[in-house]
View (cartoon, rainbow, N blue to C red):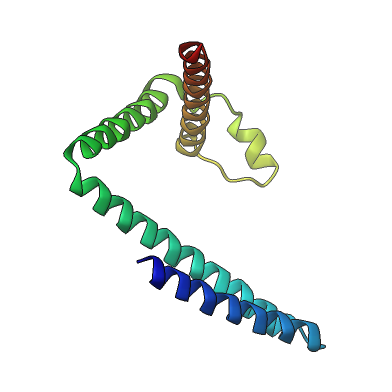
Length: 139
């Protein structure tokens, strides 16, 4: 697997170098830059897919890792559900003022955004507490 990744990295490096030379030499860079952006986008999607597949293969090979991962996913889902049901109201924005400014927003959209913010706050607090507890456990 390492040899394949190394060969792929070399090939992509050569492609990047060729595209860079084309940008430097060309007067009209829009086509080459568009090509580089597309290449970067596709590479990101491909690498994310490979990472996901290899991670799932690693989880499937070890039952304890799979159990811990499922517990983590369930905890994350629980935080999102609690944020949406308990904390997000959807009534904390004046929809008429938003409509007057030309922003079409519904109460459901406001509630979804609020749930996302509450989820972020809860997860940030959990992360800080985990770092503090981890720091005290080391000492």
